[in-house]
Image (cartoon, rainbow, N blue to C red; front, side, top):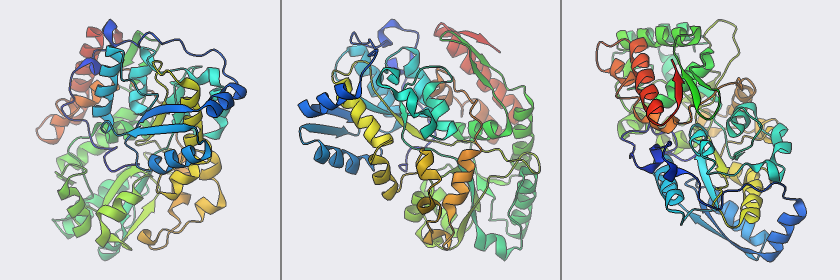
Amino acid sequence: MPLHTRRALRGLAVVCALTLGAAACGSSDDGESPKNVSGKDIDAALKKGGKITVWAWEPTLKKVAEDFEEKHPGVEVDLVNAGTNDKQYTALQNAMSAGKGVPDVAQIEYYALGQFALKESITDLSGFGAAKLAGSYSRGPWSAVNQGGDKTYALPMDSGPMALFYNKKLFDKHNIAVPTTWDEYVDAARALHKADPKVYITNDTGDAGLTTSLLWQAGSRPFDVKDKTDVGISFKDKGAAAYTGTWQKLIDDKLLAPITSWSDEWYQGMAKGTIATLAIGAWMPANLASGVKSGAGDWRVAPLPQWTKGGKASAENGGSSLALPTASKNKELAYAFIEYANHGAGVQTRIKNGAFPATNTDLTSDKFQQTKFPYFGGQKANQVFAESAARVPDDWKYLPFQVYSNSVFNDTAGKAYVSDTPLADGLKSWQRKSAEYGKQQGFTVHE
């Protein structure tokens, strides 16, 4: 996963990308999804050749595209970086609205898929036989691409099962055990900060992605999508109470470094040993190796702390899919590329170049699990990540306007990090703001 994929969405441009209720934001007039496309149809398209345009920011796709062209000499893949996450989504929706310039393939993060599936601006891949691949992927990513229904809106490209990345050297120095529960995590935060006031257990200034991931792990299910027009938003369940209760202690005791993730200060904090842990997706190792080079050998990976002692739940944090816009004029070639990149030989190419897979065969392979990470002192970290992937509950849902909802997180829930607003009240504010927007777009919203 690229460095920018987990950046919090801040100040998202409110263009057509966010006006989900507007008719102009529907798919363009090529929008019928193919009913049945056989392997012979795809083979014929590959033999005929042609050009497809792929919008994606993920760097490992460059080699995948080159290999695909070499395997199919008549095919040209134009790989375009139209911007990371929110910037690409804005450009994509604008192109769809204009009815021109729409790519044949688009990288879309799991949390944003609902926005495009809602207006049927991306193709249901069931007609290509994509449903038969369900057992090939870990539960979290597969649940995301079929949106909990009987349609498959994309194929998973990677995944982000969560783990606890921690500075072992720092924990050993202060004789503090690695936490296995979130209560122990709070205790460790206090012990670290008491031993050295410059050290914080982690950083957090309010991150929608981290918050939803921890709610997911805690058993909270705040978003309910009943159908295309009926959604629910509520943070009243026990899982949400567990999360806010624990995180409030960290906020109240000033145990969170007031540093934004992906900033220069963030990398410096991990390098200097003032940020001790990260609860984040399994795609993080490459970012540590390149951004915190001085930490090589100091850091390790452990299972995510649990909300109840002896628990085994995990969650996803990040991850992307490849989708086929309904406006694509070369759907057979486009699907052939998507399946090659996300299910075929392209998966191994991406793993070799640092991507974290969503495919069960790769997650459970001996080669993958026995890989030693020099950065983590030779630890076989993939074993921790693969176990985490198997423990992700597959009943999580995102809102069909989650892109917008995440963009207002810091103006609502984020207030808890910079004022006396309790985090529970901050989530209620986030709920109200998201619900207001949903109603403006024509949704029936239950709170």
